[in-house]
Amino acid sequence: MEINKIYNEDCMDTMSRMPDCFVDLVFTSPPYNLGNSKKGSFYGGKGKGDRIKYDDHNDDMPTDKYIEWQHLLFKEWMRILKPTGSIFYNHKPRILNGVYDDRKNLIPFPIRQEIIWDRCGMVNFSGGFFAPNTEKIYIVAKPEWRPNKEFLGLGEVWRIPPDVNIDHPAPFPLALAQRIIVSSTNEGDIVYDPFMGSGTTAMACLKYKRNYIGSELTERYIQLSNKRLSPILTQGVIF
Image (cartoon, one colour):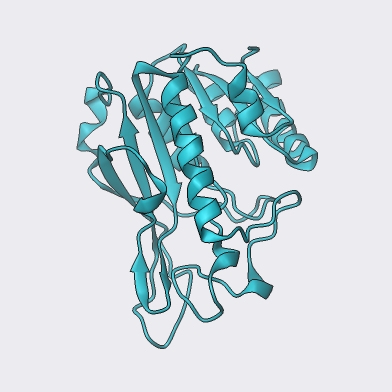
């Protein structure tokens, strides 16, 4: 398995070539499957005509199939994690048919901790609910994992604004990736992002001397990632 590379393929294909206990961190924000929500639901439950549009993924799976898919991914992530490894899983709560759904049913393992990501702004509006401005980051960890001691004071609420100037339908901010990677891994460790998207995880890894492996279905997003990574690789600078 070549490291510091983004593979243009399904993440299950990438992981099938990884041995057990291979990576130190899985950090990911999968497609939220919000297209499955009925029109008028909240916490990002967009109508079918207003779902997040990816180039090579229809974000509208039947709920049971989506849950099954996420469970399968978690089982593979746990297989490839070292005994000291962890998973940081970013997902978006929703209200569907008037009922709050924190999406914990997507996680088939015990949750070590729940981080609240405060996005610093109200992202959805509805006449029936207070406007939400948070997403969740669930930590699932192997028994020997511990965060780096100097970061324990970060607390459980992280106030980080999103990146809005990236040509990808659902990027997460570089500051978020940096915080997770630096606080939960060490130099030389391997970080795997199964939905690499615009390359933010890889950027954070290079800046802080971690290794990365990524999977991404869309060739255009890989080209975007390589463009963002180029200044770091050639000049040692970050933007």
